[in-house]
Length: 163
Image (tube, rainbow, N blue to C red; front, top):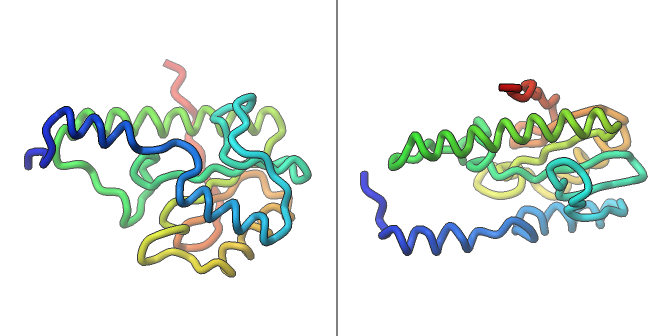
C-alpha cells in the first residue's frame, strides 16, 4: 500500500510530532501533581532525558509512545510502507531505551515506563487506577517497572548491543 501523502507532506507531518508536552505527558503530570509528588521534567543531564524526575524517590519516569518504542499492544502496528526503514528506526529507539535505562540504574535511579496505551485509547486505565499504580511504585522502592493496560508489572530490559 502506497503512502497517502507525497514525500514533502509526509515530511512536514513527521516534523510536527512533538517530543515534549505531549498529551500523554500532560496527563501523567496532572496525575503526579494530584497525588502530591514534586517533579522535574526532561532533565537533559540524565541519560535518555526522562520525562519526569522525582528526586525524593530517586526515580525517573518515561512516557513511551507504543509505536515509537515498539510496545506489544494494540496501538503498535508494523507500517505497511517502508517497512524495513521503520523497523530499523524503531529498533534503534528500543536499543537506545535499553542503554539509557541501564545507565540510569547504574547511577542509582529507579526507572518506570508508562506506556501510551495506559494513558489513551480504548483500553486506557482510568485516573484512579493510574494514580494508585504510580503511588504504589514510587513509594515501593522497586527498581524498574512498567504500566500499561494490564496494570503495573516488571520491566524487562534487554542489555544494549555493544557492537
